[in-house]
Amino acid sequence: MIQPPDYIRAMQPYVPGKPVEELERELGISHSIKLASNENPLGPSPEALEAIRDSFTDLNRYPDGAGYYLKKELAGTLAVSEDELILGNGSNELLDIAARTFMKAGDEAVMGTPSFVVYAMAVQSVGGTSIQVPLAGYTHNLAAMAQAITPRTKMLFLANPNNPTGTYNAKDEFDRLMENIPDTVLIVVDEAYYEYVVAPDYADSMKHFRSGRNILILRTFSKIYGLAGLRIGYGVAGKDILTDMNRLREPFNTNSVAQKAALAALRDKAHVTQSQKTNEEGKQYIYQQLKALGISCVPTQANFVYVPMDDSLALYSSLLKKGVIIRPMGQRAVRVTIGLPEENRRFIAALKEVIGA
Image (cartoon, rainbow, N blue to C red; front, side):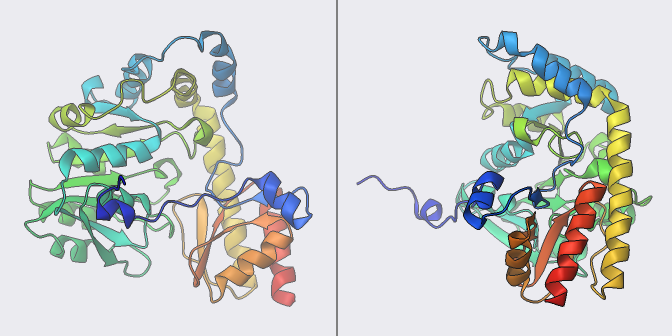
């Protein structure tokens, strides 16, 4: 009998949610709203949609394996060279490639908890050990993470802003972290929600990239650009780091439709601005309504709100029956995506009914 290594058999697969249509059928409801996956409620840029339609005639051709045009546009936008960029099937794939490139069985990676579950999965998939450092005040404790580094540490993962809490690490504390990280450790900064950040003191990861540090900065087209269904993201790092990662990258890992849509989305600044405005207005509305209900939440720099509360699974179930889908985060918190104004109002109305019941 063929068996994988023990560390593979010990992994818990990521469990996706059911399709909305299936949940509606099972519960006998209709017109539900999904506020569970941190998607842009406005959808993709109109220019991206046009690029998608125009790409259909070329689907018999393999995609550009180098992502030439998208990387050229990104290079100009970020003021980096094209060989300092890598494209991925979502930033998730790049997390996996990085772990497989720079870690082996017995190595360690430091990360915060709770944070994005894929970090630990990527480390475990190569037989590595995740050193999980509890958050402090719902925020990554960078001083404790630096202290957790040992001679076996090969990577440090940092979600900034963090998922699921929406908190961020500021420039000064991030700079101190970088001062205490040995050159033998690759710092992976996951900035999936970067475009939503409004904090003026948000950490400047690109500064450390430009100074030549061993840093991999990950961003995505899944969030503010509204292209989650096409799975495309990118990474910024030094040429040597990306040369090694490209040894493991699949030849055609990003599809042609995704590349063209991402290129158009990147150019549509107005859609990004509108998405930011919609998110900020929705955030303030949810803050105000939760406060009026006597419910505390964690201030966010992303497009979701983390709400600590007891028996979150019961709240999730009750809201689900009213056609409002949120994300339970274990027993003690829920995460609610900021939606369109009418979706936010519907969430609050359903929450009031559940609390009243």
